[in-house]
Length: 110
Length: 114
Image (cartoon, rainbow over all chains, first blue to last red; front, top):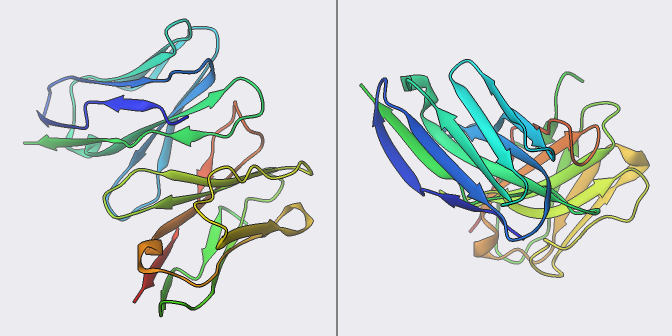
């Protein structure tokens, strides 16, 4: 079951904040966040495991609410280098594969 | 190797021909995925191998698509009788297990079916 991401696209000015949401209709074991720049392979950002944790590094962090089967990615004080398409991937309970949402296209402008 | 490698990097074929795409995962990684990404679209799950378990083929779009993983390492994705709608970037990823570890993506194979 593919997770649903929102918004589909967002444009920010440098220094602004953004939140990208990811939700699933099924119970989740883990949520994975990746960023893909144009013409490149997706690059890992972070994984959140069941347990309602929050993770982060630098100015990018994420939360995982397992009860609501939702995760949010927080980008603060955005930089030009944050531009790209952000994908959330989810793994359900049981032996289910990692499936990705359709992505959120983030553009940071000067 | 240092990372996931895929070959060829680009493939142009004629409609109706068969193609084989290869993925070399990171050594020791037991989990291997194939994804398809059409222009401007998301990552569409195709197939998943985990160790010696039967592969999860639930994402394969039709019986023209098949994949093998020999010796728990190299994987080959085969598309028979290619159609124009098969044109996409095919990405392979590997990890040490399914759920809690980072997936490392290869650079992808760009397939164009004329």
